Image 1: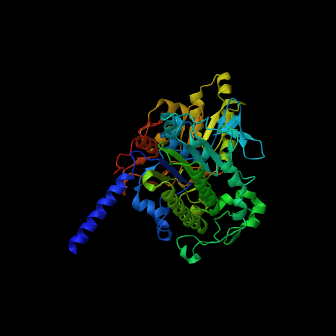
Image 2: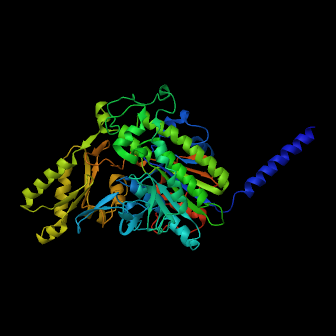
Image 3: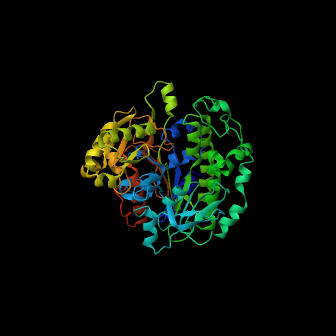
Length: 540
């Protein structure tokens, strides 16, 4: 009896080991990046007891969790985060310094993915389309497609256009985003002349109408959200019309905000997940010898943070529901592709911070930098020194652009004016420092905020003066501000699946390390501007 039991167990171990090895190919068949916009590192601990066993917990328990990963530049804008992840480079190399930047010659704000040579597809609004043309370097998925003459498929999905387009890279087969006018998934003729039939079929099901006929109430009972502020606290902006407490009648809210309301509820994440599942099935991702890449960006989390804050019941409920969506996605991938064939990377575009109003109320450092007042006073200051000349062209709260043509025509020193403006700015409440473009171009900073400012600076796109605010301060005119402090730069980073060993690491990791690591998995060239290192501790 003992011998029989012994050999039965031995056979089971041998079979299990050989089966496991057999089903782990030399290279992954599918790579999936999952972004959760604005996700703070500490959320994983804060909501741990509310998560299921098959979502965030499963990835952490069975994957490699890097606990000290961060973006290493000053202006942690959402668009810059996506571009950094896929290129393995900082904004100083890939050029996406912000979602918008100013162009002196044409006196206009430039959207980071605008493309006058393309048109939108899938919507009745024939607006200018989008493309990754302004991304100045290759991505790891570009290198993947180049390595096998475009046999790999690359699909990118996000409710936000720039998140989808930038993450897909230059050679993506498709990038899809949510049309807030119609509730449909749309794209650009940069990728194809018409939407695939499966996308039309998905849109025809009109899921947004179904979701917006629901009521958003808490997934768990209210008392379970014990680490949150009161549901009716005064620091929440809420929805249009002053709605800021549960339950939310989404049908009523749709009358105020149209389909765009969906992406300020957890159901926006669910809608994104469902479309991602449909893309995997209809594009047959991970089913042949060529590795495919799928990007999925969950953006409702950042929209809800803006409306309700990082300590609200609403954001807690969002992550509890997202955990269940993640569980469903992981289960589907297990069944359709096999986790042993798939590498999944979960991270965030950046972190999030408390409202300055809350910080002030509890006597914490922080507040609003009154950038528009500063701009008015700054123009008066410059005119007082240089006469009627208006050398201040544009100020977005972070970058000041000077009119260099006027300065040159008036035969003044550009550096002198930059220095005077930079010194003047430091006197404003909330400003820690400011640095000129001349200094950023000519000096080699090795640490601190000046190094981060250098990593954010691009000669052709950044301003003449970069403003560094104190921790806890945000520009009053910028509702998507991101700083170089840890609450914005530190993000979760989890690798899961394929040959990824389980464990955790406290070693410092730059988010520029992800793209070269994925390239090493695939045995392809690194993205051409990447500066990161390979995370060699990650494989078994």
